[in-house]
Each structure stands twice: as C-alpha cells, then as structure tokens.
Image (cartoon, rainbow, N blue to C red; front, side):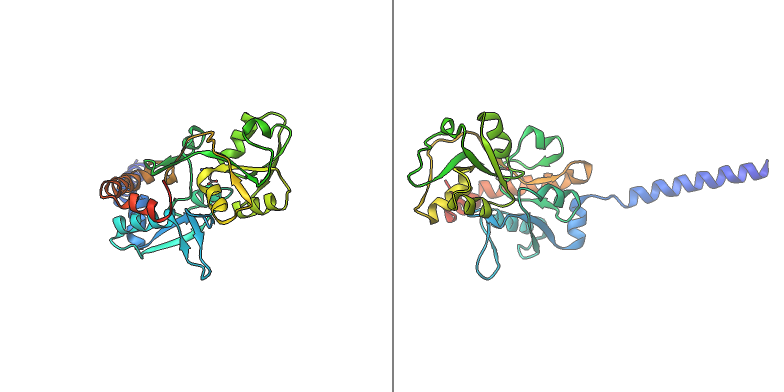
Length: 260
Ligand code: GLU
C-alpha cells in the first residue's frame, strides 16, 4: 500500500513538474527570433524587381527592403537579418523545415495555400500575364491553345494555365531565369507568370513583349508556418506592414523599384 502511494505521489510530482516546464518555456516564433537576435527570411533571387542579387552578390529588391523593415520593427535594427535564397519550387519546404522564419518572395495568397500556411495582410497586388518574343502571333490567352507554354514549378500560373487553356503543352522550370532563357531559345512559345516578374524581363530586353491583358489577381503576402507558434509573429508583422503603409514607406519603396 505504501509502495502504491509512493508511486502515485511520484506521478503527481512528475505531471506537475511537466506542466510547469511546459508553461515556462513557450515555444513561439517571435520569441525564437528575438532570442536569436536575427531574422531569417526566404527571398527570391530570380524575380527582378522583387528579389534579385547584384554583381557583388548583395540581395536587392522590394521584397528584400520589406524584409529589412520587418527586421527593424521586430529587432530595432534592419541589419539583424539573414537572407536565404528561395524559389517558387522550394520556398514552402524551406519554411516547413524551419530553415527560414518567413517567406517574402512574390508569394500570392490562394485558398489552397491557406490550408497549409498562414499569411500576413497583403502588401502588393500583381496579375498573371503573358510574355512572348517580339513578332509572336500570340496576342492573348486563347492563342495559347496547342502551343508550348513555359511556367515555373510551384507558381500559381502552373495551376491556372492548365485550368484556363485546354490542349496546351506545359514546360516547367525551377527558376524564372531559366524560364526566360527557354523563351529566348524558343523552347516554348510564351511564359505565363506574374506581370511584375515578366515586366522585369521586358524592361531589360526589347526583343520580348509583355502582353497587356491580366488574367488573375495575385495578392502578395508574407508566408508563415501554420499554427499557434506563428500567431504572435504574424500579429507583429501585420502591425509593421500597417505602420509602413500609413507612413508612406511602402509606397516609396514601390516607386524606387518602378512598381505601380
Ligand atoms: N505570385 C505567384 C506565386 O505565388 C507567382 C510568383 C512566384 O512564382 O513566386 O506563385
């Protein structure tokens, strides 16, 4: 009997200690970032003017600048940041494996993605468009029937083009740089992607043309792992986005990168 009581007593102590331990050490992403003293952000390197690198390997672009504003808001210093290159193809994997705290990478909010990720309030709206070589007979989405369309794996256009056009050949690449090269080498007849990204190519190259029509609304937002761990972080990030919108900093950044 005494033995039994002793076991029960020990169990009670164990459970209580366990509970105390759990409440003393809440795991949440905001605390992790603050304790680390550095924000780790996944950004693109192939999507001018949102995420790209200069000749010296420096990360530049609207998303990169936005990430710095978030670091300043969370840690009081926009230099306390590490950038990890991501693509449309691998960004969710890098977020899920905790290689990054968040993704700021031309990422659209979609109902499918909202099932597995959480998003901040949107900070920009793009739209899907078509990029062709100069002199192409393709003038709109209907002309893509029976043609070879280039997309980037993991992007929203990979899905939408299959739904919008029947009898279309899809050629996929892992990066926008490779997709653009493929168009130049006539491996495909057109690229379907966000106007913001395609505009970057058309701006630098007179031999490609961005067609005027837009086929979707792509609200860009910052992506987080789904769950309680992210809640506090998302709240803080949304407050920063609101502040930077109100004080005109986001507008100024858009102008700096030639965005509408
Ligand atoms: N905004 C679209 C998306 O989230 C296309 C841009 C991208 O590939 O990142 O998929």
